[in-house]
Image 1 (tube, rainbow, N blue to C red):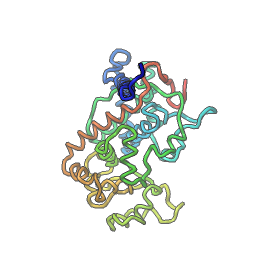
Image 2 (tube, rainbow, N blue to C red):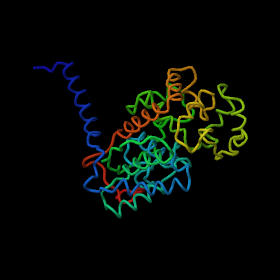
Image 3 (cartoon, rainbow, N blue to C red):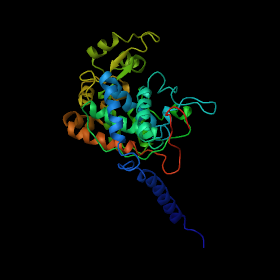
Length: 322
C-alpha cells in the first residue's frame, strides 16, 4: 500500500524533532557528577583569577561561547588551530584579532586534566567559563548543561558565512540569524544584553559614529575622539559597549539604546522604531526580567547542535585534535 504523503511528512518531522531533542537531552547539569565531581570548583578559580586581573576577560569568555555555538554548534571548534587538513575559525572575519580568552581556556583545561584526565570536553569548559564570567561581573547564574564532546574539525567558511551577525546587521538580519539557530527574537534581544560588558574596536563602530543619524550627538563626538574617520587610523582603538558601567553585568545597555547611545549599529537596531522596541523598554525598566530571560537564552544557546554520545572526542589539548 502506498504511503500517505501527509503521514510521511508528519513522521519525518517527528523523527527530526526526536533527533534534535535526543542531542540536547543527552546534556545534563549532573553529567560529570561521578566522572569529574569537582569540575565546577576546578574551573571557577581560574576564571576568577583571569577576570580579577582584567575585567574585560569576562566579556571575552562569554563572547567565545557565543562565537563557538553559532558555527556548527557548541563543539569547541573555535579553539582549534589551523592544520594541514582544515583552516580553523580563529582567523575568520568575526574572530580574527577580536575573539580572546583562548589562553584562559587552556589554563582551565590543564587544571581539569590534572583532576580528571580525558573526561571533560573543551566545549563544556567554554560553557562553564561563560556562566562563571557573567556571575563574577554581577549577572545572573544558571545551571550549565554539560556532556558536549569536542569537534574533530573546524570551519573557516561557516564562520565567515554570516552565521555570526556582523556589527552592521539590520534588525531583520539579527532576527533571522538567531532564528536559524533555534533562538527566538526575545532570546536575541536578551543575549544582545551581553553588550553590557566588554569593548569593541573602532573598525566595528566607525560607520555608526560617522554615518548613522539615530545617535546621540555628544556620544558620537566622544567616540570619534579615539576613532578617526580614516580607515586604517586607530582601527584597533577600543571603546566600551556600555558607557555607563562597562565592567558590570546589568541592564544599562538597554537604557543606552533608549538614549540612542548604542555603540554598534546592530545594537541600536534593537531600539529604532521596530518590533523589539517594547522589549528593550521592558528590560531597561526591569533588570530581573532581563536577568531571567538572559539566563534562559544562554541555556538554549548551549543546546545548539552539541556533539554527544560517541560523536567527536574529548580533546587533551583544546587547540588541537587528539
